[in-house]
Length: 535
Ligand code: G4P
Image (cartoon, rainbow, N blue to C red; front, side):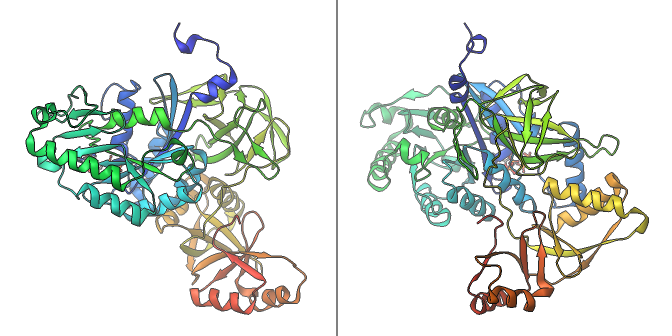
């Protein structure tokens, strides 16, 4: 019987799920790799089906266009497919740096990641930032060195770079034979076979040739004398220099296997996918403020990691993306919205597949469901079957840009307030309200968001906003042990003009320079300043 027709236990359903994200610097090949993985999974039939969500010139119009398309089809947010009896969920992570915050939040919903690196460009800026977040959370990572069909860096040099710049401990599980114009193929250390690259027919994937013993003279016949000699030497060097693969170390985030290939040419992708299916973790436990939640718990729990607005003003509904952390989510069942202390049920929860979304009756831990929302949800919200607890770990980072936001149409102040409120719930930007005079300040990761906010406020809420510059360097979340201490009272008095509250009513110190931060820390040592909202 086909496994999908069997009735599986909760444990079986959950253990066959693998939910991950692909991270990279823009242009390294994330979209191409995603598409090739879907092709192997049989989830799509032809290349070109996955829409790139790339903002090519960093232009607002690009972003609007992408968002408008996505409003119609949000299929690119989660791509799910079955492969070798596993259910694979790929979560989309925007590569553009102005949307890094969105990617950071999505990373709270994945159980592992694949890092894509361009062989010629090596480790790039966005990769460094994203990998750092994964490393801090010990998320298991696989590395895919892409574009081996092009001239690039020497494989050993590149691994050194990955170790140094990304602070990873790597071990190659595949190894290139030649590079660029001399690229011959790949020795798969994991499966012990050789796959040859055909320059003429790039879409045709050669059968892997099993090759357990590299000393076999047959190697010369297959790849030629020079390559055979080099390969033997290199594989020997690898066994001396790099740690051997340990599944446990990988799962704990202490060892990162590396694969080489060319996504565009379909090369090395199947090997990556097979190894991923063999070793990547199933849904993982997650901390709440009261206890650790285990995926196979019988009761459902989940949290909102993304909210997607419909940009069509006539249909102002939103889709809240919930990562199911434990149990089973069922259609039309009452669930408890912890922050609002309210019970809600959902008649049309969406599940996501590679090319469509569909209303489903049940989904399991590891899966993502999309719930239609009219304003109940905020990023980070927890749903349970009644238990009062909240998932941890969707922090906000200090924005890079700050501006006052002003109302340009006094007749529309209600609309403006509602618009700002909802956009902040979606996580488009962060709002800080000055303690002294209630003026509102919008903080963003990139300058692009200001235009996006203005545009959306006008088109979706009928409100007009203008901005005014303000000189702020960083938002620092304030932690203090004793709020009544003299030191804290003095800090509040002296820094009054720079104190604000975030959306969760946490106190924030808006520092105008790094020097100010340093001085403040020295003068008020009992007042701790954090660049992240969760500490
Ligand atoms: P991203 O999502 O990480 O931003 O990257 P994307 O997949 O869009 O790939 C960026 C560019 O790199 C694309 O070319 C893509 O065709 C190319 N590319 C991806 N994998 C490989 C590979 O293995 N070898 C080579 N040589 N190129 C690769 P483009 O010209 O920017 O876009 P397009 O017009 O081809 O879509």
